[in-house]
Image (cartoon, rainbow, N blue to C red):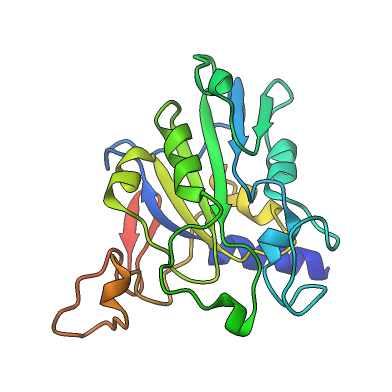
Length: 229
């Protein structure tokens, strides 16, 4: 029962930030009967990274540190029996050159942290996250799932490359909650509880500031290709 509740919390907290390079052609929901899907990224199959700090230990850690379902495991359960899943944390040149991959799902984000160990003046996607996104999205239509405890820098050139972007925050143990939404079993409900900045130099940034110029404003969130809030 508690895991069912956690799964619901995940799917209701996801914030859809981008859905399609053309607003008239949404990328989500994904086709669960796609022929072949590439799953990539440092957070695609890492339960500890999904959970963040204060999980099992104060600062948390990567790996299978508790009971749960990773994003990769959830996707494998959600797709059709005839769909082939290719998983590579860091996709090879050979894989990216293939012409038979329908789409990619790239999960990247922050390593677990707590308190002062999370202090960061740059707020770029760590663990070479931006490079992983770029290399995949250059070759394959891509959904990016960002796992983080706060907004991170999303450069314009990177946003242009990707087809869809979901802020998943720290979803914890229930990767199934992400699969529930990206494949269309449930709609996106989440809205940004904070302003998503363009540059760290803007911080602190607050709705209502005279110079308010966010990447995504407080309360932003897409659902069914429509902006809410």
